[in-house]
Amino acid sequence: MNVSIPRRRLGRGALDLPPLECSAIGLGCMGMSEFYGPSDDAESLKTLHHALDIGVDFLDTADMYGSGGNERLLAKLLKTRRSEVVLATKFGFMRDPNDPGARPVNGRPEYVKQAADASLQRLGVDHIDLYYQHRVDPNVPIEETVGAMADLVKAGKVRYLGLSEASAATLRRASQVHPITALQSEYSLWSRDIEEEILPACQELGIGVVAYSPLGRGFLTGAIQAPEDLSADDFRRQNPRFLPGNIEVNRNLVGALAAIAEARGCTPAQLALAWLLDRAPDVVPIPGTRRISRLDENAAATRIQLSDAERRQIDGVLDTQAVVGERYAAVGRSLLNG
Figure 1: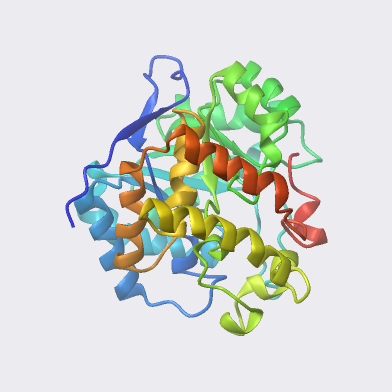
Figure 2: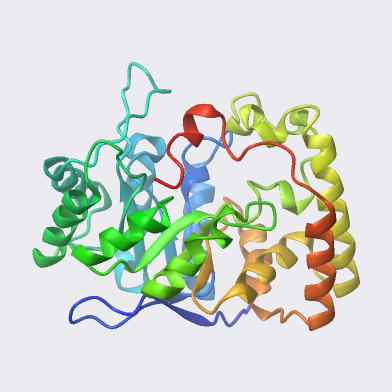
């Protein structure tokens, strides 16, 4: 498949660096190592190479995905193709091998630097293009955490800084310490929390938006009809929106959007991604997949230009089809918009 992927810019630049440029759609790599059922490293590596081959160069990982395993997986690609990759990773969640479900957040300056060095070693690279705090630590002033992240920029270990699931107030405080290039938050047709306060703050501060779970954790594709469609160890089985009673209602939203996609001649996933790309020129969705066929499908969404009529149709669906269920269970919700 030959897809010409357009480019987008995140942020206004940082110190003596120009704005960070990347493919208009990225690849979220989390599911290659954890959370979404069984995975196959060989298949994932083929998908990673194919992403670069078609121009999807913005690869997103984190030190907590697979307890470092996802970064080690990417290292196999980076060993020969580092110059082709815009590499983003994150720190903040700490994993305990004796308690996989425990994920305390650590934003202390000394930990920031330890985590970065560990990621660099696992990835096998000398610098990270975009380094995020995965969640804001409520016990550490954001100025201290971002100050330590800024030291990594000065040391040449990191090029640009980002935050994930941060509030508008936190973004403003962080930006006083060092330019913030990107905010990574959940953003999709069924998760629009950031539109009220956070998205305007990003526009005010010149911060790009990297949208994770842009396909509603796969639900917006229409492929998931019931919890039983998910493997036993898939974390979505505990996600409120996928629980019995909620999932049936949420299928109404997906069905209405699927009808618009069919009329357009695209898939529901492509419509969902095109909608995000249409929101602003510095919004970059990072759908995750392990399969080349899905990657090609997602990449083709960059060629879809929504008409005014389609925008009105989508708005009409969003106005009338409410989403039922929180984004995360209680523990995960406590760390959102910090």
